[in-house]
Length: 243
Image 1 (tube, rainbow, N blue to C red):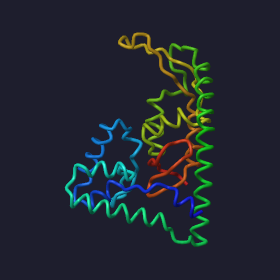
Image 2 (image 1 turned 90 degrees about the vertical axis):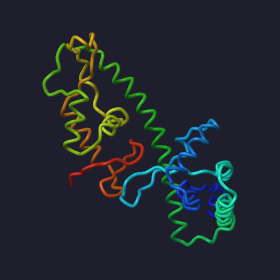
Image 3 (image 1 turned 180 degrees about the horizontal axis):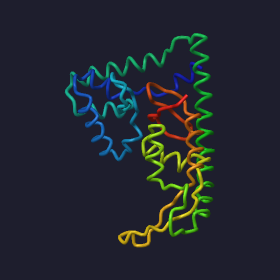
């Protein structure tokens, strides 16, 4: 297990760089974003979420040694020296890890197992989502002249589910699009507004939508405060869970 720890690359967070260089974190983040853009890197790939002192989600960046030293080229020599010294300390701690306790070994094994299960779930989710999209397209070919009773559009679904669970529009959309048990469209309804120019929109049976979000809420796992996670949704989201 120690070999696994030693093989992981050392990274430094933008928060730690800001602390060492006595710079504002937002300014360090701006410097990192500019550098990554100039290098042709995808900035989002280096971002990580953390909770600040008020339990709000914030973004930081994590850089390896090469990128950290590249960033430091724009800083003064004393600041470069402080950051590089800290980098060496981090590398030394990884190169000569202390023996793991029994508890730490168990935690690491469980973490690795969870990562394998997460990747398997993501693969299964991607396959299921493709199948579901194909089936929904086939189901939604019928164009109706008016919205059927007991059906609702995505706009109505967002408003109702927000009132029930406090879920954001983005989370509601993700559930409707990504979860394998999301409801199938009852059909497509022609928009009769003159400016719509014959456009259509999907509607769903209200009972199916209710069942979907009841199941979704039951499967969510508490993270912190009002924040929850779910295997089919990326990241954490706010949820008012009714026990």
